[in-house]
Length: 70
Image (cartoon, rainbow, N blue to C red; front, side, top):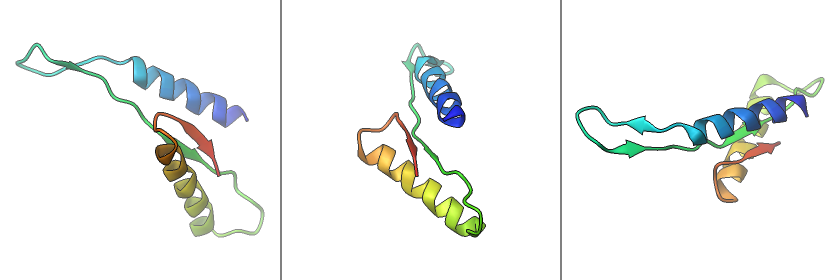
């Protein structure tokens, strides 16, 4: 839960950023989606990354700019 809170703060901070395009008056903003997975005892690193990756794609599929736990 603590990691989710930190990730959500990061997501909100990125959302607030306004990025000025050099040599232009154009300003853009971006969002991020984050997938989180907690290590489960006997799983491999590959399995852990796979769960985090699936959580990331679930966040994107449900509207982007979200934090999901896998």
